[in-house]
Amino acid sequence: MVSAGPATVLRAGPRALEEKGRLVFTSVLMIEKALTSADVEFVTTLHGDEPVSFHVLLQPRGEQADRLLRAIDDIALGELDEAVREGETPEGEEALTMGQRALEVSLTALRSAGSEAEGRLIEDHPLDELKSLVEEVRADEVIVLTDPHYVEEFFHRDWASRARHKVGVPVLKLFSHSKA
Image (cartoon, rainbow, N blue to C red; front, side, top):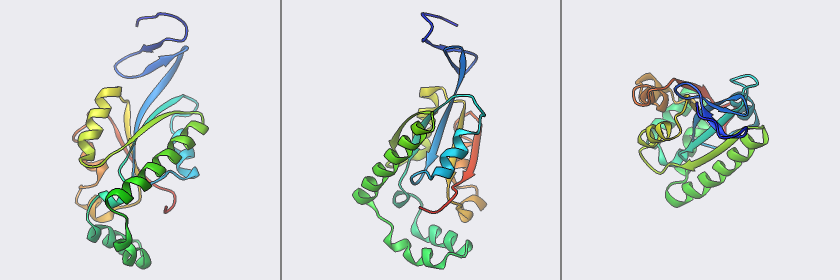
């Protein structure tokens, strides 16, 4: 460890950051919509009282797997109305604008809960972006927080399953607390 003063960020062990004598856990959080207050409480309390620095990656739902898979997931959840509305899911620029708003809301909520948070939108290739970010920030873990995607999960094509083979850190799969 190298110290240049009491407020300096120090490296402790392979990944963890230490700031002012306290361990700071670094998490990459992959989401597809704005975090709810329940989601924020859930992810910010995973490590007890330890401070957490979140690096949020958001890929708007309209830019992901095709509509048929999402409609099948909705049907599997018994949400027939949602399956019918899959055709209304925003795409392209509209999805990016909504995604930017969702990212800003999520970052504000994480910061209000006392965590450090920064983030970016993903336009394509989410796992390549994830791997780069994990390496860049030397993340301790990846948290994938999405709605259930049963078809993708069954075939291990969901983000969490695919990330486990790519990033080299623990990957935690969590489900969002409510629909956005």
